[in-house]
Length: 355
Image (cartoon, rainbow, N blue to C red; front, side, top):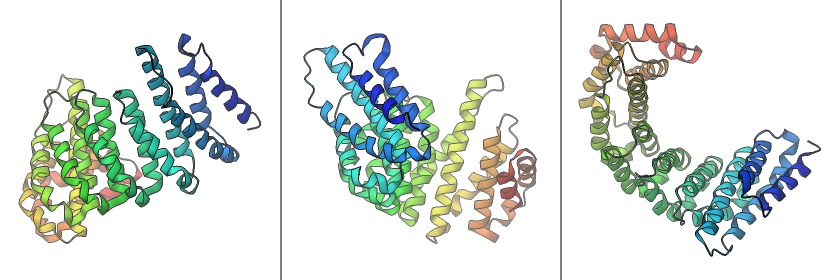
């Protein structure tokens, strides 16, 4: 702790050195600052609180750095991405009341970064925005009208799939934070999410989180999710039919992730509709969902996470629909699935199975 101030000052000076481009020195300096922030002791919080406006000011000043060559442009945008990364780790360490006074300034500068044509900068800016969103919760809503166009562009960035993936995660964070206030932006968001699932060129790793995101949005909107219900369920049922051969480990892992995403979506949709008293809208789809769970039950390649999510989804269906699904829940595979999940699970999974 006694050395933190000096260490941070010296490391930031290193990132400003004229030879900082050599041997990856600048990146190493920023990574060292980031590591210090992430591992700082509790009594360093006042220091981190003072550091936040310093980093914001550095980012703000970076926009006026002149660019004469392509090399200048790459250096400038590299620094901007690294500064966004520092803002993210600082926001994650500080308390909401410590961040709130700086939130407008942070978001103004992050939005300016999102105007650049640089995928790495977009990744870092979206990640920092996620951190701000998590801390501000409902108060984040005031930034949505300015952020929404960039968010949609991120969701549609199928070439730079890492950007697309982080944008999907940000949508989930926003839905959890501002809840029903995400509604005005949902037409564009849901259109972009559906397009990403339909795009054959998008890296497949993005698709499970997209499916899971349907659940986050459904939880936020509750009954307001009804206009998106049919298209979401069609996508989920289509994804749930994906299988992998026993000898393809990579595809088996992907199918397990896909099934996790499908079940997280079903859970969010069911809980949202239940809270709105609209579970009757799911009636026609329960047989298909139970068929999916039966397929999982008989699949020897399912992993622990899939088992855990499956038992949780069974519980949600039982809780939300009660006697209406008595026959479906009496099928032999249900007890087999719950028993296997109980025997392989941690305490939380065991509690879910017993429930």
